[in-house]
Image 1 (cartoon, rainbow, N blue to C red):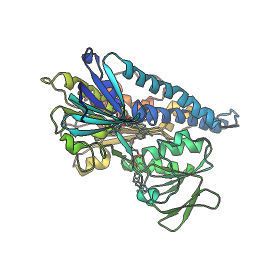
Image 2: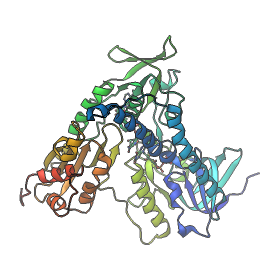
Image 3: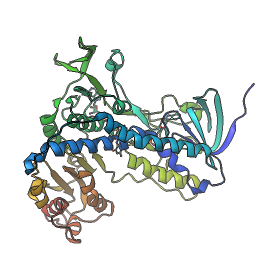
Image 4: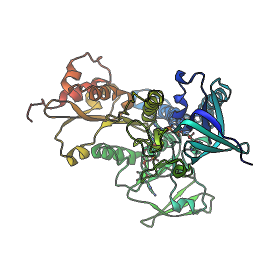
Length: 466
Ligand SMILES: Cc1cc2nc3c(=O)[nH]c(=O)nc-3n(C[C@H](O)[C@H](O)[C@H](O)COP(=O)(O)OP(=O)(O)OC[C@H]3O[C@@H](n4cnc5c(N)ncnc54)[C@H](O)[C@@H]3O)c2cc1C
Ligand SMILES: NC(=O)c1ccc[n+]([C@@H]2O[C@H](COP(=O)([O-])OP(=O)(O)OC[C@H]3O[C@@H](n4cnc5c(N)ncnc54)[C@H](O)[C@@H]3O)[C@@H](O)[C@H]2O)c1
């Protein structure tokens, strides 16, 4: 006997950025949220927030280790990993639990804990964790199922235990030897965390440099700095993984050498979570790489079905998922006044050591598309606060249009890069020329932000017709 479908005004698949769609517009209506994992999504539970909390502890450990350079003799006596871990999850886990409870018992919402799958147009079956199936349909559906870690076959098939970013933050001890596979954002952040907290880290990356999607000069500079702290193996991959005699892991690389480690972290990229979503049944088209295909308003190929965040976006970043969620939240209730997503100046920061922050196109992209540019790099070590910090690593590069000085890109490597870049993001977004940003306002002396001011002032004068 077939069970009746419960009909909702809005059905949201995924409780990360999707959870923010329940605005006041939905008061008095019925919204369902389906979640098959931990409520609150990647950023809160296994992504941005916990990693940055660990990274803060790692930065403190580094500060102690480098303090003698400043005439302050400190010593890093111990790293209480379990206390660090428990501070992080003692803060986060209750937020997730409270979020779930609020949606379960809220006046306008229902939470369905289980895996959602399209079985027809705007019809979704949820295989409930508690058993049974919730059969749902809705006037509008939003796909916000995010992305998940990709694990190469050589790891999966080896039978050797491995971690991803989903599990590595919950381990019991800092591994003495950590092997990280991958050379992107996640590898760079965890290499910093674990090195600073006591591991000897080896990074095996396929590309010719770490963070290879960033501006080449920036990625090369960072790779050189990282190679002083971690054992970095570039243009390499793991050919074979076995268990070592001491219970550890032995990874055989392409060049025939072996890396021994106590723990393996796989950080080889993420993929949109659409594999078991029944998209064909829902009439939802996918792109070749598995992402849901959306237009600039967040509409999928299926009428009344929307998508946002990692599952459909060209950027796997929380501030982008949040922006897209704000756009879709508006569009859901304003069908005659649709807003478009704005992906023009998407910044990103890597919370490694030193930090990295970027916005705009790389110089290689500009050259490739035939766009002329002027650029200037200001070293942190050549501004007053950089002297205070004895900085030898930090750089701020700005790239601008030679005709009017409008910024085309900016890249920072160094302390507080993720915050220092903000005036440059603002300048790009509002089309302000470099000289106007530098001289049209005060810059506090001798704050570290002078590195940004001086980078802007260092650009050659723009010339009309240049
Ligand atoms: C380790 C790490 C660190 C990161 N750090 C940063 C950072 O510092 N800054 C930054 O901007 N970005 C960072 N990111 C990226 C950021 O976390 C993501 O871009 C963002 O969380 C994506 O949000 P979302 O809502 O699209 O997906 P998610 O938050 O992943 O939400 C999707 C939810 O859908 C659920 N789901 C999936 N399929 C189904 C289904 N069929 N049925 C039911 N539920 C389902 C999932 O369990 C998940 O809870 C980081 C990511 C990782 C992994
Ligand atoms: N601070 C942040 O904003 C932040 C932090 C973490 C993650 N993220 C997001 O999460 C996404 C995923 O992060 P990620 O680091 O997993 O992916 P990534 O795409 O940044 O990097 C993956 C890396 O692994 C390499 N690789 C792939 N297969 C390999 C193999 N078999 N052997 C060796 N190397 C291999 C790739 O060449 C690439 O360098 C990022 O794109 C980013 O948008 C953001």
